[in-house]
Length: 303
Image 1: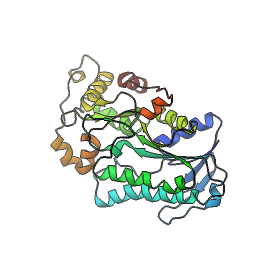
Image 2: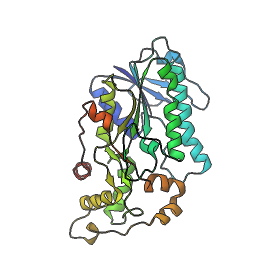
Image 3: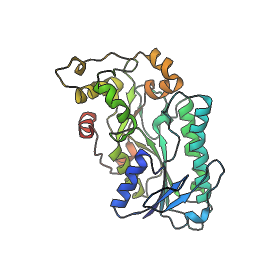
Image 4: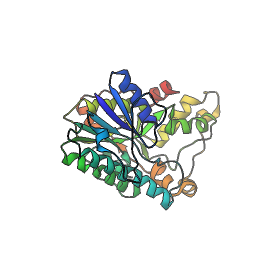
């Protein structure tokens, strides 16, 4: 297949491109600024609405991963605007351009997030569950809706709702490594909120799976089948990272919810204290086998 990838320099994009090339696929990068890459590149400018349709002819599939980081700091109004527009405007520009093609790709895999579900406590959430309330659910709703021009063109659209991606190469796990290693990280709030995690290898595997299963369309939860509470996640990280002869192996002081909210504001509430217990029903029903389904062995293989 000839696959166009946006967000190609990010954690998921980098791993996906390596995987696709290793499996004999042709990769094209959609980039803001052309750089030193081995793969062909197509430039776009989201702010100016610039993307040449002729540059997108001849593709078999598109994997759209681009978007402003949601975890880089407190959410000011300006940051929230960048988060929303990088996803909604970028996706709309891409899909409207794809809809103009004489020979459009068969498939568009567009990243989304389990932020769609918001804070729903211990309720089991699947792809048919209701949307949550707040900034992230609203962004995810608009993000997925921006794919409509591609659907109208007859392109199969899959919205991969990504969980907390774990990899030693970046993202949440890299950021948490030293605080846990030094015994400085404890439960967040009461520790009862669910964290729906997924290994980077399974994110790549899930994208490859949906590319090769034409019966799949619409939302797909990309999370390990065994979500855990923050308390369990914290305990597991301690056991994996801290030697048993140290007291921090067994307990570290928690961070009260009020402290998280004071330090990080709305971002801390939405990303660290909200509870989303998400299950990958579509992936499992269509035969995907997870490489990492249990947290502790998954972490031990990464660290």
